[in-house]
Length: 387
Ligand SMILES: Cc1cc2nc3c(=O)[nH]c(=O)nc-3n(C[C@H](O)[C@H](O)[C@H](O)COP(=O)(O)OP(=O)(O)OC[C@H]3O[C@@H](n4cnc5c(N)ncnc54)[C@H](O)[C@@H]3O)c2cc1C
Image 1: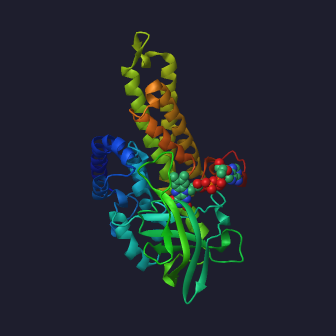
Image 2 (image 1 turned 90 degrees about the vertical axis):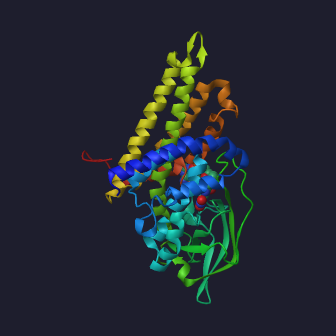
Image 3 (image 1 turned 60 degrees about the vertical axis):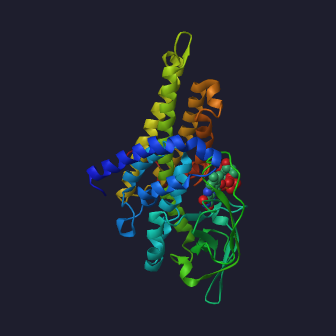
């Protein structure tokens, strides 16, 4: 945890960077379909690739509460920017940090924290997304190491990544989560190839692709954690990641509300600014209330996480609420902009498309509902029940 003064300086610097560099770069980034290398270098210089990593590995050593506060600021700019560094701070480094050997930590964490190396996390497959326990990519023992066979789909940062956390079925007789193991596979490993970059609805500057493993041989030391622990590693990484996704949704909600407010103050109809019409005010107020609720939830969940309390249900509540809320907020903001909101000349059209994915990746809204309800049923009703 940083002292408040240092943390205050970081948030101030980040706020300026977002306002002066990232937001103005959004149209060009969308046009080019990539985040400019100069901005990636500046994000690395600010330490953003290592927000979630301890100082001993070259990270900023932030608590999750501090990290989400930075995400509230960073994600006022297009979510493509966060996407470039999100896996390094989340599902791509979490397994190494929590379950990795000393040698794995030494090899990967400093390079992930500095942004020199990009991480990818490979769980989803062509036939299995939400039903992750059923994945079929196989890992078989051979010649003292492992051979991986299979295809992973929609993998964020696959075109750029240097190290892939891969969840594969190491027990060929199993059909459920118990037979899964996590592996670290490096980019230049023979048998690993990356497919063409996917064409997507939004997140123009963030790239996803298939990752194909064909007779991909890796050494025994590539195993992450213990054999059979892959599902647990993936789920615990995703649980933490969901609070981060929710924080991104909050940052973007605040941006969208600011855009709506500015436009409502300057655009006039029927002789007055549209923001003076009560029906427009209702849209602004609903958005503000939802963003406030989402922000409060994310901070509370992050505090619980930092205190070491179980927070799987709370992480899912945050992801469900904050990502559904930002969808509604983007829709209202576009409505407040009227026809201009539908046009590429204004930022709303791009931001509206970007936020849609938040309800899908790292567990769809329906999967969050299942996790929340399952735990509620397990805990049961009680007058002393805490949320
Ligand atoms: C831009 C982008 C980036 C991504 N990055 C990564 C990445 O880096 N790594 C990675 O591993 N994956 C990644 N994914 C994949 C993502 O996590 C999956 O798309 C997501 O988990 C949903 O899986 P699916 O697409 O197979 O949908 P499906 O599982 O086929 O679900 C289809 C629909 O059915 C619903 N559904 C499924 N099962 C149930 C159920 N039991 N009850 C109720 N409803 C249900 C879902 O909610 C959804 O609405 C990415 C996806 C996108 C779009």
